[in-house]
Length: 124
Image 1: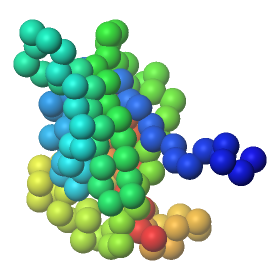
Image 2 (image 1 turned 90 degrees about the horizontal axis):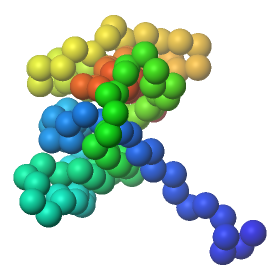
Image 3 (image 1 turned 120 degrees about the vertical axis):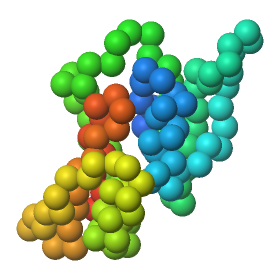
């Protein structure tokens, strides 16, 4: 499969308001690498965000985004769960309690984005 193997996987999440989602993910360290604003519109209808090696694409949903129907979790990784938790709380987000499950003794916590997507932040 040389030359044909997949090199990266970037999730694309449908969101109600791309600007609002960009602001949320900026608090996790993401910056906008690219975005598309349709002719005659003021808000982007697609954006690609990056933080170090993490990437996510956002597309404006054409239907309501129903949080309980989102069957995906986004796992992100950090160097210090406690410090990241404190910084996100100070930035106005509501991170859940830090847990230390058997598979992650460094700790992890849950965060919910504006559209109900679950974002886990785990220390590695």
